[in-house]
Length: 74
Ligand SMILES: [Zn+2]
Image (cartoon, rainbow, N blue to C red):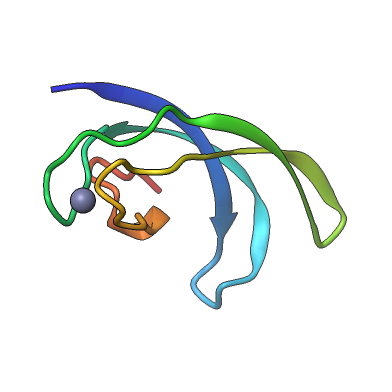
């Protein structure tokens, strides 16, 4: 099992962007259990916050939502 530390947008329960959060997640596709792609740090600007978040592409073709990641801590 691979654990990956990534940075994602942090949102409140209304979906408003409130900053960035670093999380540790199980690095496998929540849909099929396949290996997920290498996370790339990409610039992210939203609501006056400037930072970077990780983005990745899965070889299996599934698009992983942040909220579907296992081990998601918020
Ligand atoms: Zn998949």
